[in-house]
Length: 292
Image (cartoon, rainbow, N blue to C red; front, side):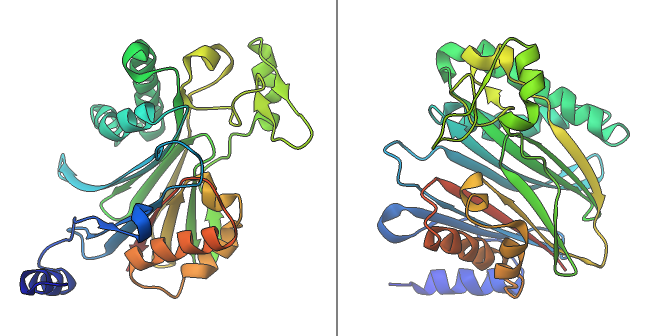
């Protein structure tokens, strides 16, 4: 039952006087949704997570936040898709953006600063292998600077897609083992290609780049691809999502499925619901950022 206090809070959120940070749990505890509005009237965002059918705890984590740093309004968004445990993804949720923001030249040397922060964070994860375990995580991060400049970086197969005038543009790079076979082999590794299975690094990991994974690190890279874009009047929204969506939907299908939904939170949930209806069985996490 909804209380009078809850109704009043929802009215305030809708009116823009405050933001909602309360988590709302879906059927049987499988879904979790958070809806928030930034302090910038030109940006709204929402997120949704669903536990997959694998017999292990949820391994996806995400970040949605706004901060004021050195006279800049920063929107911080990220998806972390863990494997062989959730500890590395959780560590990234708590530490990666801190390392990025410690780079004093983020504004003037954006790509170099992001790459240094990714490298430093991966080194910290490897140094903490006793606490964090031997697992790893993919990552896709987006920093929105003053609602105008968008910086996207990623390792692995979580993806960032931008919608401009109804057309989907992929901002991240899917780091598939077959695409980086030469580099993996040059480090002494190999890429398996067993019928009925996806290509894997050393027969184990289905991505060529990731944080952590100490036992495979000599054959893996943690260097991100970085893309910088300008948000203009044609930019409608951005999707960040783990591969549980992209296994069953194209970029354009994802954009078209939510383009008509103005509420970013509802859009994120709708996108995951559509992926589940297409029989995606993986853990799925999604963030939708709308630009007005």
